[in-house]
Length: 204
Image 1: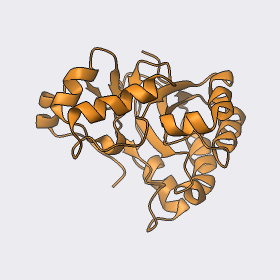
Image 2: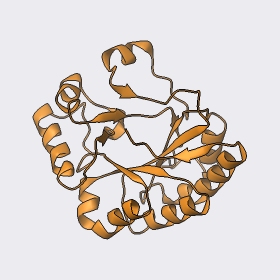
Image 3: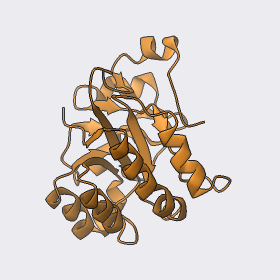
Image 4: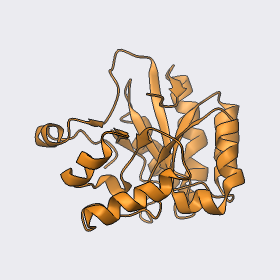
């Protein structure tokens, strides 16, 4: 399922979470998780440049550490960055002190006030500690480019069929998603442009 509207109880428990932006806009907000890696991130940047689009890259600290030149490329090309943890740690199954330590490791490499919890899963105790430092950016449109059971064409349809003004769209600049992303991203960028959307990064 590509479109996700959080139930009311989630919004009450986590009022800090940003799932989308107001619909009174002509913009959508592209995001990429799990990079940066040299195999795919530079290609993504070239596609964004071609379509005049900006995006926010929610980076893993371990990948920034391994590929600092690719991370710098993201910033040099005018995009924003967010913390996606150091090791793609899952909040629900992790002690809160260990979880925050992992985020802190990433913070030493990624200067940002934006955070996206891996898998979208995080405990209230973890939110309580991190909310003083970060804006929590979730999403309302998930491409599912990482799925082995979905084609690149299906990923593109996932996005274009449900996107609306103010949507936050998730892709992944990762090896797992590479095949679907290389097929779907140009189609999505062309489709969003045809719909008249501006494609922006997130800066809060």
